[in-house]
Structures are given as C-alpha cells and as structure tokens.
Length: 452
Image (cartoon, rainbow, N blue to C red; front, side, top):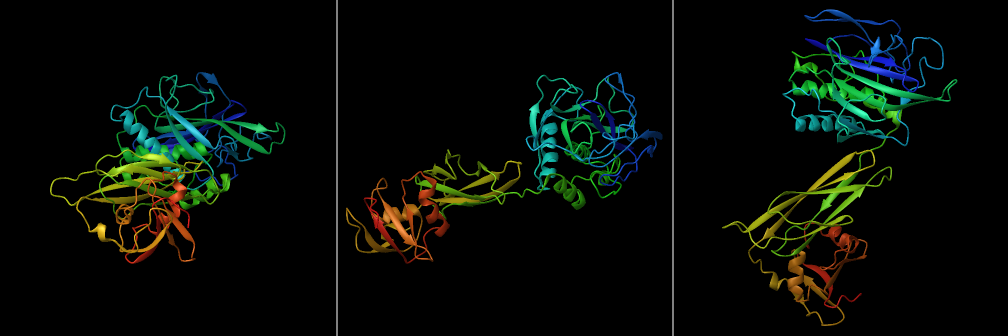
C-alpha cells in the first residue's frame, strides 16, 4: 500500500499550513513557487483522489479550501491576493530556534512501545541536526496535559482520534500556524506552532515510521514537498517496500534548510587521558572542545566500560579515583569514557578515551635519575618515563604539595600538579603528554610546589 504525506491549511494566527504524508502522490513544488488546484492520484490497491492542501474542516470548524502546495510553507489561502498568497518564506523566529516537541500517547499502536516512540523521535530530530543549520528540534517528553490540542502554542506529536485528521491513506499530517509582519505587504512570516498527527493504524514497520517522522519534521522546519524520489520530502512511500522509506535528508534538502536558517557547524571535541595509571591514583580527563561560531558548549560525560567510578566534573575536566583491584589473574583493568560537546542548536561531537589501570609494579621507584629533590625549592632530574602516578612515586614528594614542570617545543614551561582539581592547571601538561611522559624526559620538580 502507498501512503502519502501531504498538506492542508486554515487560519490560526493568519495561516495554518497543513502537510500530509500519504501512500501516494506526485508533486514537485519549487522554492517560492505556487501550484493551484493540484490533484494527486493515489496509486496502489486503494485508488482515490486527494488534493494536496484541500481541507474542509479541522475540529469540526469549516474552513476555506487550500488547493496549493508551495515549498517552505509559502502557501496560498485561496484568495489569490497578497498578503496571504505566496511568500515570504515561513520559518521559526530567532528566539525560538530550538523547537521543543512533546508526545501524546493516546491511540499509539500496540507494536510501538513508549520507549521506541521516544527514541525514534530523537533519531528523526538528529537526522535534521546533521544538516548543521541554525535550527533544532528537541524531544521534550510527554505533553502535559496529555491530550491533543491545536492552537495551544505547544508543538505536539500525536496519533489520530475521532477528529480524523489523517484520513484515508494518509500516514501523517503536519499543521503549522504562522503569523505575518507587517499585516500589509509582509516581509516576515513566522512559524508559531507545529503539530504532527500520525495515523492511528500506522503499520509496524520501524524504518518507515522513522522515515515518516523525518519527513514531517521537515515540514515543522518549514520545508514543502519535493517531486524528487531521492528526497525525504517526497510525499509518498510504499509500506510494502522498506527501501522506499528514506531516513536522511538529501544534499539538496540540507542546502535548503541551511539557506532558510543559516549554517551552524557542529563543535569539535578531543578527550585526553593518561596512558595508564596505578590503582588508587587520582585521574584527570581533559576535554578540549571548540565551536566555529563561538556557541557556548555543554559537556556530557559517560563511563562506557570498566568498574564503575564516580566522575567529579570541574569545567572541562573530569576527575576520578582509579580502582584498587582488577579481576583475578589480570594485570590491568581498562576504563573507557566518552565526552560529548553540545552547542545551542543541539549539534554534537563525541570523543572517547581509555585509561588502563595497572595492578602490578612497573619499576617506577627507579624512574628518576639525578639529584634528589630538596625538601624546599626545586631540582632538575631525568625521568625514565611513565604515568603521573609513577612520576610522583619516583620523586618521593608528598602528593599534596608536589609540582613538576617540563618545556614544550617553544620552550614554554608547562605544569603538572598531582593534587590539583582545577582543569586549567594541568591542561598544558595533558596536551604535551597525552600518553604519559616519554623516557629520558628532563623535568623540574618541587616537593613544596615552588615556582621555578
């Protein structure tokens, strides 16, 4: 059976554009263009005729017929006169560029668990996030109250009910409320609300369910239908042919969203940790994150494997105490961690690091060659290589007061303070020695944290 995703409209603030995804239809609107009186022939076993935009009622209220399909939601209300016919292009305002969408669980198909419903919504939103535009869709959990309401200034994803919004072979419908400014000859058209209504008898094909959500979220962002079968915004799919269910916006659609909202690149992040540590050592992980647009970044830390440890987060650093034991017969245990940098449009970048914890001695007590460090002041010695914990053990200094220095390629001193919990203190050291201190490295040390 072919399902379609299509469009309808009515007045809310000025115009509501309604998009429908159905089991049929062939339509290719161009950006800013307008097609009037378009009839879509539904193919497949259930043959019928539908109009992309035709609507008789919503919630029992009669409205004028919209028989148009214009990309970027530049629809016409049937009058053929400005200001409500054609552009300007509709988009979310600068103050509402993270579009929160909530779910209504009523009439959810039995095959679709609440967890799968939520994860598929997050996945669909992430597909548009890969477009790297200055816009995002965020899943906000279940709606409160948990009922489907139109024109309530919240953005809902729900399944159809007695109101019969998604009719016939329609798999989903998106309704978007827009406002105009100024009222006469407007230059700005703003999306104020968008609601996705899914067919209550949606077939149990997860890849096509994801495809429908990605498509409908394209309407939420402001995209219209495409006549190119390679596009996610193509208005039909075949539920008996999973290969017809695309799940990624095409390059052309990525370019369209970037044109509408501007480009905002994903951040970058690098997670730096020691090459190995000894049991019970205090370990610091450093996240180096950057954003080309200068957006503030949130860091999300996770432990991926190994004995559970408590991460103490301080800025761009995560500190923890290494486990004191390993599984029987093992000489080491490996802990792995990830950090994800998230910008204001929910674009992400993730980096991982592994930290081996050795449980056997490695000869660290003979790792220093040269003069013994004095109780006060500082001294110069050659370290035969190893972790920060091994360096501390070789120096014989108390962990609470020890400090060490090395020079980088430019001759600048970088500092290592084993007891420090301030991220910036050891940041240069971790950049210089991300895998531990190499053999035969000349260092300056102090048992009293003196400054050379």
